[in-house]
Image 1 (cartoon, rainbow, N blue to C red):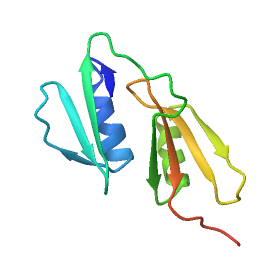
Image 2 (image 1 turned 120 degrees about the vertical axis):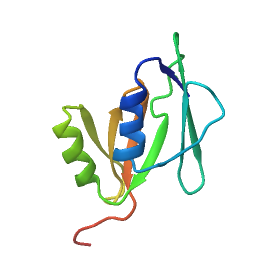
Image 3 (image 1 turned 30 degrees about the vertical axis):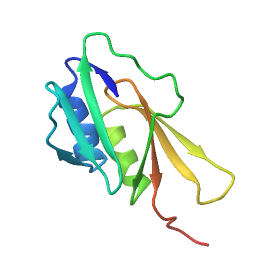
Image 4 (image 1 turned 180 degrees about the horizontal axis):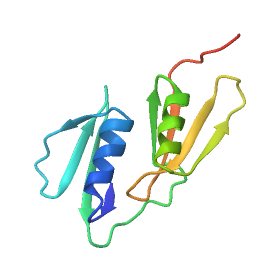
Length: 113
């Protein structure tokens, strides 16, 4: 995905530290690559990025949404809590440092059944 030049450090923090995706080497100069179990995310930093108008560009599965919310609040990053039809379908939507909308979804529901 395209991203504005100059936000490399913030993108590295967001996807590497917050989302805990593994950073991989990339053959594209001026870009970043992250890997999950099955997917690779390539970020290309350009002067005039095309920010995808899709409401949610990426969904990242995390162990606990509460942990993500605490970090986002500390960094003063706005996010929305989203719930689906099922009680276990809870997500956080945030605009990542590159301008794309990303959702964090909890891998398993923790609580009273």
